[in-house]
Length: 56
Image (cartoon, rainbow, N blue to C red; front, top):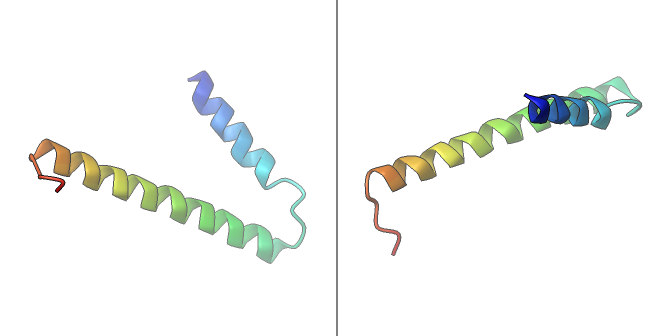
């Protein structure tokens, strides 16, 4: 739980005092898009490992 709160604080600190509202919204959307894409790739990798895919 402590690590989750630390990640939340890093996320909030990263977007504090960024400036223009459009830039702030763009970076927030880009951050969430990046998190989602990372978890999709992670899921695909774990799925391939679980089904015995040969990484040749």
